[in-house]
Length: 416
Image (cartoon, rainbow, N blue to C red; front, side, top):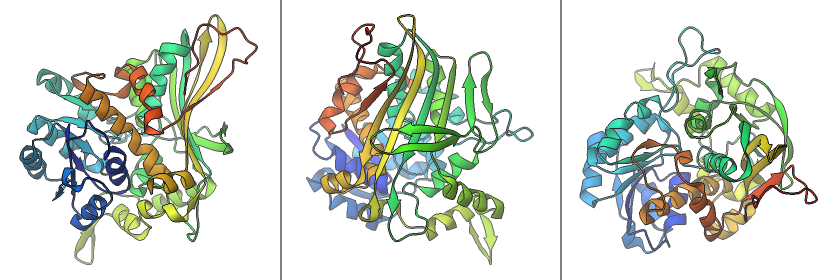
């Protein structure tokens, strides 16, 4: 497989590092606006000849198409902030390439009732073009990171193996990560975090469809595994709520994020001051987006690994019925920062995110996953993905309400 990787920030770098020794990878073009950064990433991977470096403006469809054709790539991997998604998605179609992203095209709140009903939803732009992609025989695999991505695979796995009927699928994300030396330092893209946390949260219910609620609504305490413990989680806008109901039968879908009071306070302050806005404003003759200024003022998450300590947990909590009895499970993946730094030289959040699109590339290259049009991870058989997690040193766990003494309804416990 020949891949054009657009974006060599934290997650882009991790994708290259995870993929470098895979025999199915023929070439991965490292493309970034910051040519120096792309060259830094190439120095981390071997053999370097498989990782040519190119400069690209992710807003310029013509540049992307030209690079894709120049290198004869099969797939464009989008690893930049989702503000660029439309351009990269359209360029992949124009170039005749398959496409993967880790966050779908952006939403726009309802102009009159933003906290009651959605306006333009996450991914609407992409799904509106699905028929065109299908007709051309191309696949756009959207939302294929960790959340969304692995969380969606877990939802499909639960439906296939663990339940007869599903009540709720709730993605729950929590961590106990700390960054030494900084009063405030996000461990993931602050641009994306602001977008998903300050937009109206979206939920889905059978018979009602998609609807929105006030920001940071419905707080609950979720007990995370692996020593992380209880964390207060709140509703946040996220792709799983838009993806899961399209392919998995259930009654309700939610996404809740363990942000913490301090982080929520910072986000509220940014919103109050207008520093969350992504539209450029005039500052003494220079047009700049306030959110870009915030991102530039904060440390680069990709370079925080040596200062970080703790664990991050991504997972899918599912309730329903199996064998006539209630069942509750939490399928999860925990990444420990010390282990990730020692083993891969990558901080935990970016490594945990990057492994998933690399596994997806392998499945597409080997034909284990096949599809046309715009599809989410739930559209595919979860078993080949889950089976490959061990070979990527990407362990997962299952917390199950069925006790060992209970008669289990079939062989439904994963071997992870």
